[in-house]
Structures are given as structure tokens and as C-alpha cells.
Image (tube, rainbow over all chains, first blue to last red; front, side, top):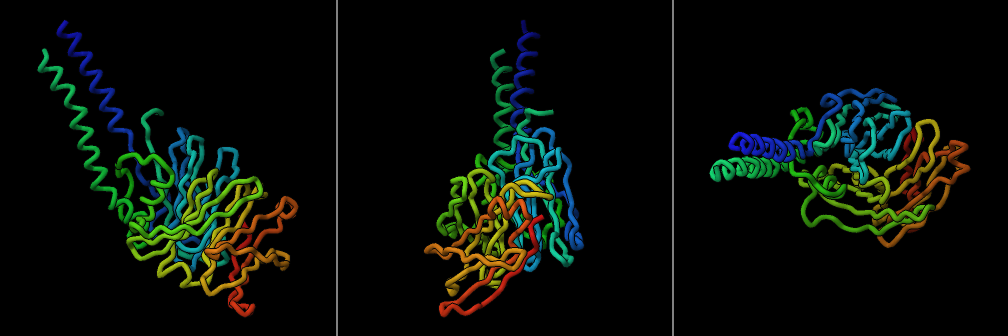
Length: 125
Length: 208
């Protein structure tokens, strides 16, 4: 009986602890810092096969025009936004497979860096 | 036996408290790093924080929003009936942001150093669905400086469309289906002063 109770308690702690430890939001760069973006050049993240990317961001100067978008496995762009300066995009619904993409779609090069917002609910391994 | 259960049950509680503490400590650090291109080089991966429940909370955390600085700029309505709400807000690191809340896409923000109108007399974004070859939807939304009394959008063929300004000087242009099929995309804005004189022309590349 004691062994059973101990085993059950260990499983309980493991399960509850797992939920606490993995229910996290964090940010993850997918380019280097201050990377050079030549005219027309873009960078992409890996796909989130569990739908964990929740946002896409591009840090650059106020004179730099560029875009961020979310690319489906079929290659289609979704929720693209283009702006001068720093771009932030936070999705309402992120439970679908995508990779992040940032691009200098202007005619001149500049330095910038791209990162994603990520969430791990611990429901997908 | 009871002691064992109490001890084991306390573990996740302590772990949870510790997790929240990490989240509180790292929240400001994360936002600071995310919003600053200058400090982007610092490792910012795997920083745990308490889960935000909405896109709005996640965005406001990312841009390091200055408390009390968020101001509504009205809303615009797209052809499918969606209403996009616009806001301006300042950040703790002296940037000003134009925030768009699209009920389908989520929230977007463009943040500029020294104010929304320091570099040009309109802050705006080009938003699209589909692509990169062909777009299903494309709209330009923004706000003009208070001194601007008229805004016209320039298409790739040189034609222009006068845009309506709301009380906060916000504007919207949405490409028609024929324009999207013809890949006739927006490429600029013409900004006019109170006497109707052209003050500034802002150009940007076609979408894609």
C-alpha cells in the first residue's frame, strides 16, 4: 500500500510539475543580431509543427522598410504586414502550422534582427 | 504517510511560485530586449514568463508600452465588415507606435524613434493576406500628422485615390479585387496641408 501511494504521489508531482514547467511563453530569435539584409533579402524560422509561434517581429531603423509574415507549409503567406521602423505582429489565433519570415522588400540594404514569440503549452511533444 | 503526501503536494506549489517569480523578474528584461534593436544581440531565447491570455497583452509586453500612453485613433471598416481599431502609444524607450487591432489577424504595431511623425508626416502599414505572388486582401491603414488635411493614395500605375480622414486623422485604403488580380498595388501616399498644397510624398515598394 505504501509503495502504491508513493508511486501515485510521484506520478502526481511529475504530471503537475510538467504542466507548471512547460506552460511558458518566450521569445526566440531566428536571425543574428544586426544582420545585414540586402535589398529583397529575407530570413525564415523553422516550422512550428505544434503551432507554437504566436508572434513575429522585425527590429530595424525608422528609415528601413520591411515586412513580416507567417508562411504555411504550402508556401502561402498569411497576416503579412509592412512598415517602416520596428514591426511587431501578435496573432489572435496561432494554433496552426507556420514558419516566420522577415524580409527587406525595399531597394536598399540595412541592418536588422528578427525574432518570434513562442508559447509552449506542453500539449505537443 | 500523511506527511509524505503533504510534502509531495507542496513540491508543485513551490515550483509554481518559483516559476511565477521568474516570470515577473524576466518580463521587463524580455520586453526591453524585444523592443530594442540596439540590445537585440543579447540572448533572449528561453526566457520563461507567465502566459499572457490575449494577443493584446502579448503585444503590449513586446513593445514595452508606457503606462497610460495608449490613445484611441478611431476605427476603420474593411469591405468584409471587419473593423480595425487604431491606437497610438509610447514605449518606455522613447518610441511611438501605431497599433492596429484587426479581429482576424491580431495586433500589429510599428514603432518609430522620436515620435510617429518625425521621419514623415504619416505613420502607416500595408497589411495583406495571401501572396507572395497574388494577394487575396490588401489594405493600407494609418494616421496623418495633425497639420495634414488631405491624403491621397498612389497606385503602381500612377493613379491616385483621395482618402477619407476621420476625426483623429486616421485613414484606410483597401485594394479592390480587380486591382489585386491586376497586381495594381499601392506604392505611395501624398499628403496635403490645410491650403491643399502638397506637403510630402511618401513612397514604399509594392507588396511582396
